[in-house]
Length: 112
Length: 109
Image (cartoon, rainbow over all chains, first blue to last red; front, side, top):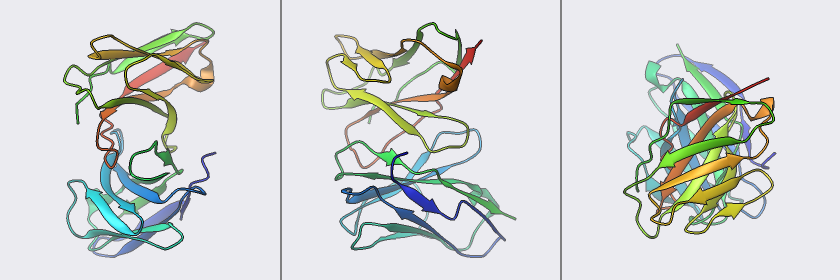
């Protein structure tokens, strides 16, 4: 158990819809990173939030956006869902941008 | 960030040491080596990390070569619950972990 929680556990959406995934960071952590993991592949970095500001972004289009709140929890929003967005979405929290990341259990998103 | 190369899969007998190699020949002096593992569709679990020196914790040992171009993760007494995908990551910018494909470790009875 890392103390990082994610909701919901599973989600089914249709193409073109929008989705919001949520992450609560471990106590004492002020940084949250989001990853997308397609079936059979390693996690791919989407972006990181440090003290409510975006602090780095991977190779994902602008329809992937995020927020971090004053309590350091975070949301990942994906607009105009595509079939290829079907994946396990992972968040990880850390003490600052230069520390070990601890992962939550993930949210399984299926786009039909 | 330096890219890493790992074998696709490895087998290990239960109770024996599992030695998982990782090549990071382009690693720079400031890049740490991190190891995570992922048990089927769960979130990755942090194992250990190091910069230059060998490291040991309650889960594993990390051996980094003197030139830092490769490392080995050692699970001293593998159990069936250690069956997982193991990721070796070399990074400097902590805001981006590059996971690669990892090594699938199969621990067999």
